[in-house]
Length: 329
Ligand code: B12
Ligand code: SF4
Ligand code: SF4
Image 1 (spheres, helix red, strand yellow):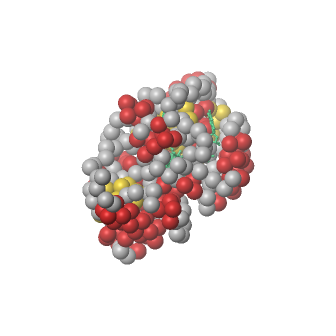
Image 2 (tube, helix red, strand yellow):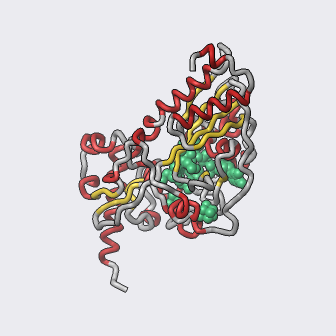
Image 3 (cartoon, protein in one colour):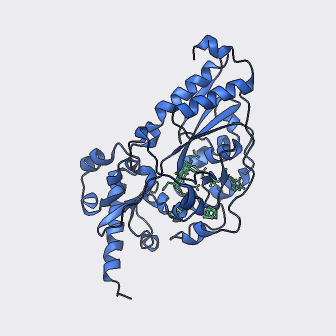
C-alpha cells in the first residue's frame, strides 16, 4: 500500500486489520497484537535465573530488565505484532550410527529465513504511523519475551513443557515479533490452560529437565546441552542424551496437541531438507572446522560451532556403542 493510502487508515482497528492481512500474505500462519505492559510472570524468570537454570546463557541475565518490562526494549514502542511460522516435519526411521536433528534445525537458519518477511511486515506497520515513530523486527534476537507476548496476543497458551501451544496446530512453530509505536488495536489474551491433567511431556523428558510444571532447567535439557552449552558435558547427562546430535523434540512430540494437529510445513522460505533429519555421526565427530562450517553453516546447526558439533557427535557415538553392548532382553 502506498504511504499516502496507508496514512488514510485512521482507526487502530483498521490498521490492525491491514497488518494482519499483510502478515498472512507474507506466509505467517497466525498473527496477534498486544501491548507492551510488564509481563505477569516476571517472578518465574527471576527464580529461573537466580537458581542457575539459564546455565551459561549469560545473555538471559543481561536481558532480564527488558524481558520483564518489554516497553523498555525499543523506546517509544507500545505494541507488539506477534507472528508464528510452522516448521513441523516428519521423522525418518532411526538408523544405527546416525544422530537425530531437531525439526527446527533441518533447513535454512530461521533467523535469516524469516528476516525478509518480517522486515516487510515491519515496513507495512511503519507506513501506518506518522513520521518520527519507531518500528523494529525481532526474530529470536534481542530481549523480546516472545512466548509471553504471544500468549497475550491470543496465539495460544504456555504448556507445561514451556512451549507456546496453538490449539489448532500444536507447538512446532517459530515465533517472531515487530515492536512499534503505531497505535494498533490489541487482541484478547489466550487465557485458558488446555494442558488439564496431562503430564506426558514432563514424564517423557529423558533427562528429567522439568523440576516443576512450566519450569525447565536448561542445564539438564538436551537442547541446551547440544546447542548453547560450551565445553564438556557432565558424564551423567551424556548417557541420557541418546542419539541426539542437535536439539531435542521429545517434550513436543509426545504432546497430544502435536500428535493430533501438527501438519507438515511446505514453506519454500524455510528451505527444509529432509536429509538433515538424521546424520551419520562418524564424519561429524572427525570433521574439520572447514568441512563442518561448509556443510552446516547455513543452518541453525552453526550455533555451537564445529567444536560443539564434534562433541555432540562423539557423545551420540558413545551412547550408540553402549547400546550395542547391552545384553538383549
Ligand atoms: C533461552 C531459550 C531456550 C533455552 C531455555 C528454554 C526455556 N524453556 O526457557 C533452551 C536452549 C533450553 C531452549 C530450548 C528450546 N527452544 Co528456545 N528459546 C529460548 C529463548 C531465547 C528465551 C526463552 C526464555 O525466556 N526462557 C526463560 C524462561 C524462564 O522463560 P519461559 O520458560 O519461556 O517462561 C516464561 C513464561 O513461560 C512465563 N510463565 C511461567 N509460568 C507461567 C504460567 C502461565 C500460566 C503463563 C501464562 C506463563 C508462565 O514466565 C516465564 C518468564 O517470562 C526463546 C526466544 C525468546 N526471545 O524468547 C527461544 C524459544 C522459546 N525457543 C524455541 C524453540 C523452538 C526451542 C526448542 C524446541 C528447540 C529444540 N527443538 O531443541 C527447545 C524447546 C525446549 C523447551 N521445552 O522449552 C521457540 C519456541 C516456540 C514455541 N512454540 O514456544 C522460541 C520462542 C524461539 C522462537 N523465536 O521461535 N530455548
Ligand atoms: S527438549 Fe528434550 S531434554 Fe529438553 S526438556 Fe524437552 S524433552 Fe527434556
Ligand atoms: S504434553 Fe500435556 S502437559 Fe505437556 S504441554 Fe502437551 S498438553 Fe500440556
